[in-house]
Image (cartoon, rainbow over all chains, first blue to last red; front, top):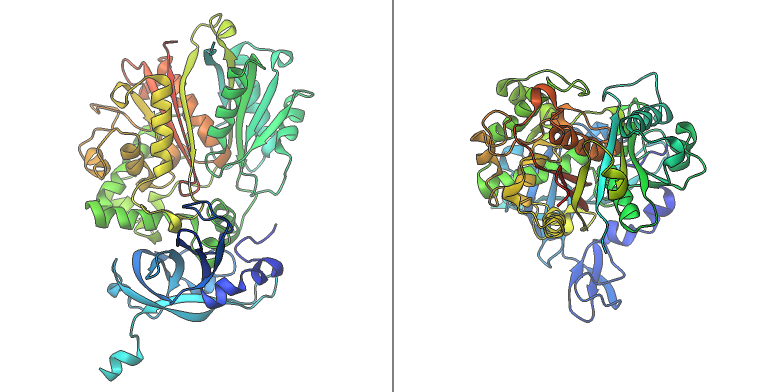
Length: 144
Length: 388
């Protein structure tokens, strides 16, 4: 059986701009922004969607703590997953790291971090991508 | 002129772990039983639709496989797939096929053999393929986690409590005690449900539907054939809607917009209003699903699913609208593809006054609500013992 939680090399490769740079698309006609990239604007149906890199600042719309992981991510449990609404509009799904679970709350301000997603699966890909952490953690708080 | 279409026979395996049987055996048992119940011979069946997600064993081409092992070849056999809504989609496809006038007798079957995947990480990965595999699952968002995000948001927005979620599970387990086909025929206390091990906070193990094997089948026919049967169950309305595959792309995550659209279409088609529904099978793949379903189907106002459940409105005894009399996905079991058909069979049994100890009194209209993924597919069906 294919291990579905782990992408194939072509699948991973074609998404690296989104995975490494948080790059989505912006509609040249109506301005709607999407993540991941889309060929067709979901609002005005224009096909003039152009790459758009997002700042990586956002707020938490909802969250959960995962105790049973998909294949290849078992070593991370328990981990926090969240829906992060970016300041530019789109919402992304990501792991929330470096956070005390007791500090989790809807509306928490977050910023993107570049992290290892998984390694050593059956396909041998070391996957990197985006996760999110609380804004100003930990350097800024220690300087405050 | 539009045809009237009815279900004239049903059959299903017990839902459980069937280690000794695969997709072909399970489907053949359910279809054979359905044909016998309908007093229809194999030669009279003109088309077959099979709903199956199929990711658990890897076998594709399940339509022809089931036709083959059921003895239905060479009729056209079509496999349909829509995550957890596979079975409901097979039923709708069969309904449309008869409605079109091209066929008079069509079989809809749902089947899933989940326990061929024995590794829990593999199972979680296979189930997660019903949501956005690339941008949800691969980021670490399991399928229960998608519903946990909705549950958390519902709790924050409307004050829904974990106890109210647990009440859904307790009620459905209680109902399943009287369903001989159910996977888990035992009761749990609210305390046991709340103390079960966490899967994806705030959802614990007893908030989640189990991994089950099973098949269910129905025979769907035109009115001319149906009227010669003793208790035809009329498909009065059917609604089907789609939405974004990923939860992240929806403006609202505290309800399932596709279910609201599908419900509206089904009610309009049937010219039936929510308050005329006597019994409902709602997609409780996770306890929060039943609460959102109550709201999306117009049975209670937005955000009030938990309060209505706590007030006992969805119980068989004394409830205004008994929900999931079969035990629901939670306790009857959830062999993915079979579930949508099993829901319709439960409504059939209720309409035929044949549901045994879980029978609801004076049932004339029943509803099934089936959700694929986190709400990217929704199918709502209205069934009645009355043709019009």
